[in-house]
Image (cartoon, rainbow, N blue to C red; front, side, top):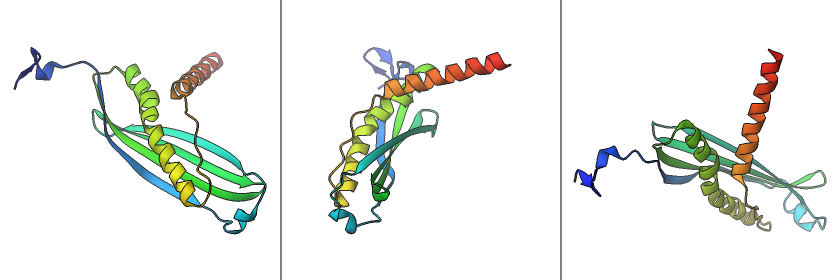
Length: 161
């Protein structure tokens, strides 16, 4: 069928985005002080670090990876360290470079976050600890802050030249 909805099938230049595959690239869990740590009554402090990366696999296929590392400590003792690298393959067509960067840095990690959150929470719970529920992340705000820092750095560099 050469035509669909009255237009030739090969002339569809409108932007499109398709999540082709979701997968865990790496996951790890360490609890070096169990079972003794279970006896502690002091509340643990939890630190969460988030990292985002993406790369082009082929012309229209991009891998986006969201890495979330959660560390729990009681004073100087590690309760647990859990890390998940949640990735996805996205087929993206018909976007200009600015749109593409916005999609890779905002939409894609937002789509992956729910998967990463579930995987990390499950990993921690299977380690014998209460499940950690991560609060939603505003990837658009993070991306805008990154762009602003790059612009400020470029302005400083231009003044120094």
